[in-house]
Image 1 (cartoon, rainbow, N blue to C red):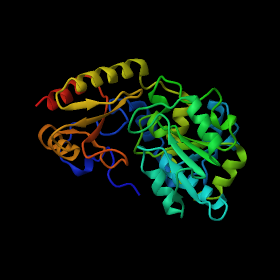
Image 2 (cartoon, helix red, strand yellow):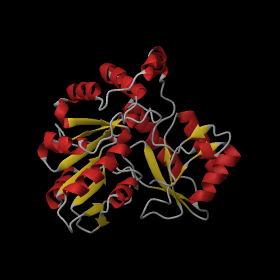
Image 3 (cartoon, rainbow, N blue to C red):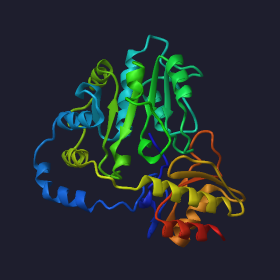
Image 4 (cartoon, rainbow, N blue to C red):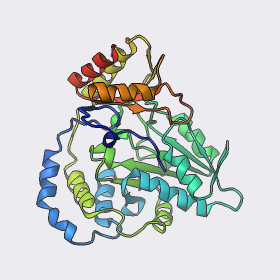
Length: 327
């Protein structure tokens, strides 16, 4: 299970600016909050055992059949369900996986939990596209190569709404390749990390296999209520062109600070390194002296103790981060 992650504000006092999560913190959710206040009575009853009404709404909104969509309590629950389901489907002695690093640690953790071992050319390949923490978007040719090379390809598209680069073909990867499973995050799309809401898309027989691993009532009633309200309204929470332009402006400003080196990104989050200090030291300094929280990225496999990640926020907040780093 995950140990060390973004948005760990609970470890600190007086955090004013949070750059540690890949989700922007400035989004206005007041309309959703008002709706949920009016619907609090749903907590008095059990939710649907498998969120079928929400699955139907999502399927309709993305041009899928309901049998090709499975709602989960966040993308992370989906990762563990997929690892469990695929591990049971693999031939004896071939319970192997491959992860394209550096990336989210839960792919590896989930596979190991269900008895799988890592291999260079594993039966199951996991990729995050756009990738966390690098901000890279893998091209279509690379995805096609992976789909052809592995028995199963799991594509985590949690950050698909935070890039203007093409991260999947029209209709989705799972329609092109029957061995592809895609993860989607309403948590990220609608900036509601506390509600835990995501969904999986795949061909109907694959979804049916995954459903057999699901716990009943895994998605709570308020999350379902929020999902229905959001999908029916498809609100435009962020001007993504303007937001990503601001992310590039922040990237340039960070890259101009002596001792800080910044990787290119096609998303709202930026992977950096710092000279002369560790990311843990920098994180503690910013949190305790400035009330600013960043992501210590040293626990991503393949990165170093000097790697940290930030996600762009409002221009004035980004300026404050830059000033705090110019020490």
